[in-house]
Amino acid sequence: MSKELETKELSFEQALEQMTRLVDKLESGELPLEESVAAFELGVKLSRRCEALLDKAEQRLQVLENGEE
Image 1 (spheres, helix red, strand yellow):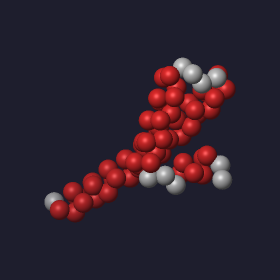
Image 2: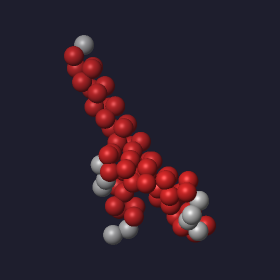
Image 3: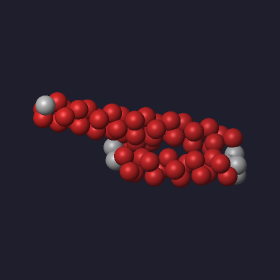
Image 4: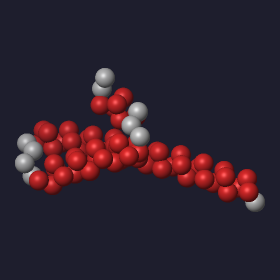
């Protein structure tokens, strides 16, 4: 299973945890260039996953708010 497929199935909390670990690794400065680039790419995918899940949650809340008016 590719990283992209795995990322699409993560919960918000799982994606955020993985992104936090990646940031820690990148900030340490100990990764070689290629691993840093790969970590950054994965971080972008995780960020997009989190954003999509937050957007979905916001839409659900808006539906609830509009239904109560």
